[in-house]
Length: 128
Image (tube, rainbow, N blue to C red; front, side, top):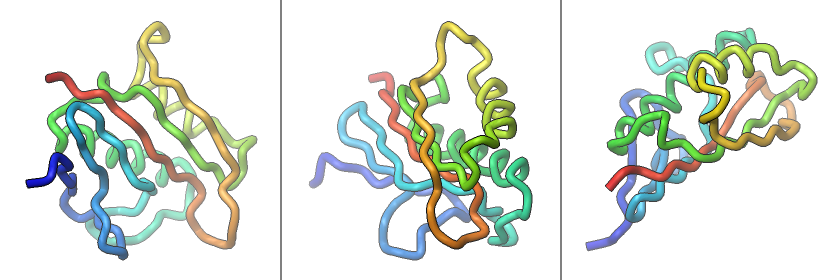
């Protein structure tokens, strides 16, 4: 039996045969997470809506692995327009309200032609 465990959340699957995240021991690492609605499979046309859904997926994934958002240690974010961080910072401070206990974060430019305006991945250290 493998030490690695695949993590999946309902309604949010990659088109390729990969899980939403993978766990070995107490380390959780995700693949890319975007703001695609799990019911309609549509990607909203505003960064605010995409960002809100993306952060909901972040919460669902870490909880499916047995953790909480307090276990997240690093998040990478890709923005179509790197100067537009207001939606990101709104969701960020909602999920991580304590300025003394936030994960590290790095933002990159999201290249390519797509309706996706924001996406992320993250790492977490789970208890036990």
